[in-house]
Length: 179
Image (tube, rainbow, N blue to C red; front, side, top):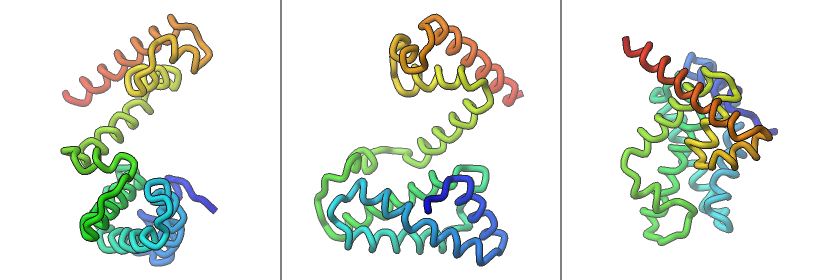
C-alpha cells in the first residue's frame, strides 16, 4: 500500500513528538517509496538499491530532528536519498549514468532550490486553481500560451488573463508579507 505526503508527514511529526509507533510506521512505509525512487534512477542494481535504502532509513532516523515540519516531508526525504545515492557512487568509485546525476552533483544550492520550489508551490496554493495552473504551465513548465490553453481546454486569452491576475495576486501577497 502506497501512502501519500500527508500521511508520511503526519507520521514524521508524530514521531518527532515521541510516538514510537508512528515512527516505526513511517520507516516501514518508506521502504517501497525509496525502492521505487531509486529503481527509477538505478535500474538493474537491486543489491545496491537495498544498501542505499538502508542508508537513507538510518539517515531519516538519526537526522529526524533536522526535519522542518513547515516544509514538505518528501522533499526532505528525496534530498537525503539523492545524496545517499551520490555518496554510494563516490565511495565505490563508479561512473554511472543515473538520470540527472550530473546536474545534482554540479548544482550549487540544491537545498536552496528545493526550498524555493516548495515556497513557490505554497504561494501558488494561495491563489485560485485556474490562475495557479496557468502560471505553472507558462512560467514553470515553459509551455507557450497556446500549449497551456490546449492542455487546460480553455482559450489563449483566458490563459493570458489568468497568468496576469495570478502574478498580480502573488506580487500583492509577497509585498504584503514584507511590510
